[in-house]
Length: 342
Ligand code: EPU
Image 1 (cartoon, protein in one colour):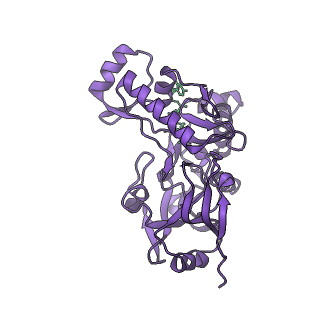
Image 2 (spheres, helix red, strand yellow):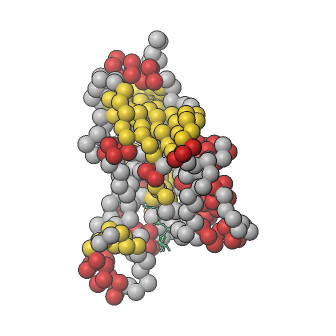
Image 3 (spheres, helix red, strand yellow):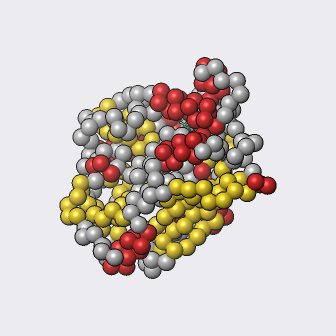
């Protein structure tokens, strides 16, 4: 098989949703699994940067070595397990997440509707266990295939092996930079869909749209409408969705904060309490603020934006400033959800 020669000094601006103009020293896009494995074996793997949809990434420097863009395409219904109300669906890592969600809905399948319009690729979705409106990827995830970077060997990870948690998986810790996800398998429903309409404003939106008996497609439409009202479209304004994770604090800390700030929203998670980072950032006075081309979105303070020519380090400086201010006021340390390179 002929392997493509790397392109030299390749701008990554169109390959990250923040629209940051950093350069890859060498760039190869692979659209076939054999090409991926042979590229890994041919080129030294130590200076390797794996790029998916670039939707959860802040580049603060040029990327030395080889940037490998995962462009594996394909989606198919593999099998139906009627007894378990489960249709096994496979999507290749380079598929655009939202297009895959729409395809599943067009095929009458339920399970991914609440995850509509999340930017990024299918292969990146398990890494941070994407989630929205009361649903996480792990809820319909069955397994994924991944190539081991060092050997080129294809392995399979079932759900337990992925160790999913809130915006977390094993691919963020012990298998970080060790595997490239090539395909993801989901169990989706053909009937008896498990609809989740109780989170946030989904029900209000459905009522507004005159929907009484929602289908997965109707929920998807509602989610799309809510997201479009609150979140900036990366094609218009560079961003990576939520920049920070929602912090989780001990109940005692929560109680003393709640006394001081009775309006503070919160969600109980077991013995702990999750506080929306967007609320903390808004209270700290950052919502809608702009520093040069780096800013905080006007409608959702959890989203940092690039108004045009911000550098990754401008966004990072803003993130540092937000972290320090929130810590000073509330004593809470915000942690980025976005992967910051390097
Ligand atoms: N809030 C404010 N000010 C803001 C933003 C939010 O006061 O500027 C308050 C809201 O009023 C609400 C609470 O914070 O009471 C929660 O806000 P929202 O429902 O918008 O959700 P979120 O916790 O800010 C999370 C996810 C989003 C996901 C939404 C909906 C994280 C880090 N973010 O945001 O995910 O779309 O819930 O499920 O968990 C992403 O990961 O990129 C992302 C967009």
